[in-house]
Length: 241
Picture (cartoon, rainbow, N blue to C red):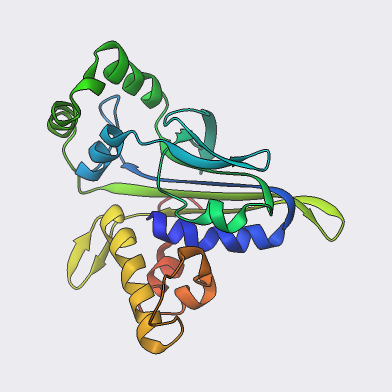
């Protein structure tokens, strides 16, 4: 999921390359939320429990900030979500774009109220002192579901050709059938991105040796692979049919 996000973000950044801001947000959620915490998979519990500091660029300065900060509201297809900082989602992009963008951050997307609930859980109930127990509680309280949705929101804002503008890449992904079996959105978007990059390496579109930054993977070439085509075919701009 986040791999595909990072691949697209450089394309948005190139649209507004000067003195710009780049924001990336992605997450998987239940399609039909019943409880106040709407996470779909065990990896979501692991993500919350890790609570690592998050690398960002703020006002041109690379730095680390706390998770679950910089809270903002995002609407995708009329669905209200809250976005806040989380770690890992932009990989090496802060290094790549240092000196080229003013602001760069990665946020997770959750249903409204999630950040407040997690802050209560970790800080007021002191579960931050026992991360293993916290992971067990969250996994038991919210087991995985089959009907999920992945939201992706990338926004670049800045100057290009003397004009101030904003470009957004927004997609919604749902479960699809692959190999005769229905795959959850979080499963196929995560595994599919890795498989598509492997295809590109095998075909010679990407180097076989050395460190490969994910932002160096061209989006259109990625989408042209056998697996990458799934993102183009199943990424929706609008509501689920």
